[in-house]
Length: 464
Ligand code: SAH
Ligand code: SF4
Ligand code: F3S
Image (cartoon, rainbow, N blue to C red; front, top):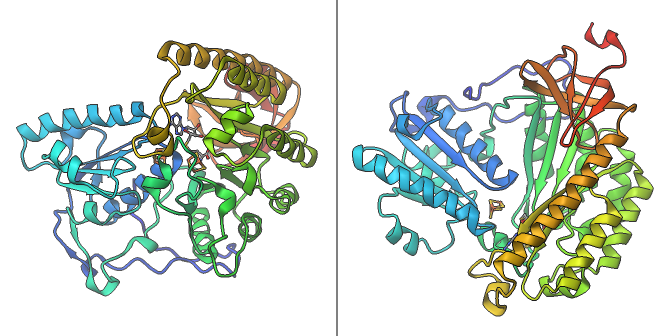
């Protein structure tokens, strides 16, 4: 990753965007570092966690540190963790085990653990991992930065608000609302990421303006419940208002958003999404379960009937919308009939993609405190497999229905020298022709595979 640089305002940028304050010169801080200090950053979890890692990397790069792709070559190892399921935690534990061996060989190695495994009380973690030099909660970069930098007094010890990652391609993720207020019974996120907190609209517009100057054409606005955006701000803008502001950025071609919460997705927001040409018809709308009994026990706040109505509303406004969902199987008390109801919903709604996971009890959550994890492991595995089968079949059928259509594709990169990108509905497309990364092209879909589409240009002139 390149260090962030200051830049001139190009003539084509829309005048009402104020760009970030120029980055202070290196002398402004009291750096502890050799300019060549190398860091290795390992990340699991959701896009929010990945966005945190990018921000941290931008901070390191600005200090002149260098990213390396193996812990063996690093002076500092940062492990950015996720707690959503036991499996994610186990991956971090195994990584930590390897880092412990490295630290034995090389005691000068610094190790930091950040992200959702770090809760309010770090005592237990400190006991279990005495070789870790710093623990940092999500978004609290301070303890990690303190290993490499002394905060500059003239910046109040805080340079994060104006530190943006230099993007590596034409797409970027931008958190707009942090945390979650929903407290679904199974979920650890609100305990680790705290309550909903929206970023001010002008700050987001500035950041996206900066990204477009560095070649970004598509941004994905992130929130655990992204439609909660603005509820806590003085003027109470909604997600649609933010999208309208961002649409005015001339160089920005596309706006995506993740993750939607059925109850927060108002008609007003949906209408704005449908109206704004830059906003993609691409929804991530977790249903979690198909039975009202399970939904109620999960405290999701909607019935399956209400969820179906929401999807009907989306499809009435945007008939071709791509919609993905999340499912949990084996939630406490889930009967065979409850599970069948989930399968029925999948058959009925025909999602573009289903992210399915077996229930994993999370200490500290309501479900863990009050419900037995009573669905046997083998039953969970079987249900998981059945959902996967339904999803694969439907996804294949949806892919086949694209053949013969023309789709707008943003070229994101090259794989085996061949351009690839996504449709406005979020489908992956490989293109059988040379194309510039970052260009928006019309592609005629000729083949459909199980996971992606393939096609070539409708109009050869796009290459000119
Ligand atoms: N904010 C989003 C996603 C949160 S976590 C939402 O409201 O849906 C991502 C997904 O992980 C969830 O949608 C859920 O399907 C899954 N998940 C969360 N906690 C889980 C648990 N304890 N066991 C299994 N899956 C879980
Ligand atoms: Fe977790 Fe529910 Fe919040 Fe999603 S909405 S992050 S599942 S508590
Ligand atoms: Fe995991 Fe935290 Fe994201 S628990 S899913 S990294 S919000």
